[in-house]
Amino acid sequence: MRIDKYLWCTRYFKTRNMGTEACKKGLVRINDQVVKPSREVYPGDRIVLRKNQIDYQFTVLDIPPSRVGAKLVDIYRKDTTPQEAFEHSELLKYAKDYYRKKGSGRPTKKDRRDISDYVDDSDQQEEGDEWP
Image 1: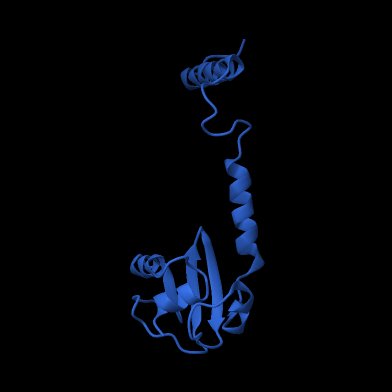
Image 2: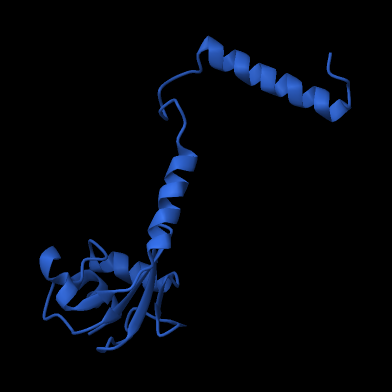
């Protein structure tokens, strides 16, 4: 079975075309080699897939006849993704959080004062002026 079809059958991608694009971008590796979408997959192959800033690692156990349900995916692959990869993505999510939601409008008066204080402070530090 082709790698793009295998990734679609095991529900890593919503469409087969998305799997094909991932292969073309070099995000899919089989046994530490970047592969084309037409590469055949065999039981025992180790696959590394980079998706959403996480390197998913799994081993092919069997080839599915067609797209399988989410509960049956583990019959066809063994997930060996380290837990640290998921913890790293959680840290990235918290690093991007800010107290205001994106698209919530213009900055408030307090936000503008904080921004101007920050800009004024950094300008003084660059000039080498003493703090009062």
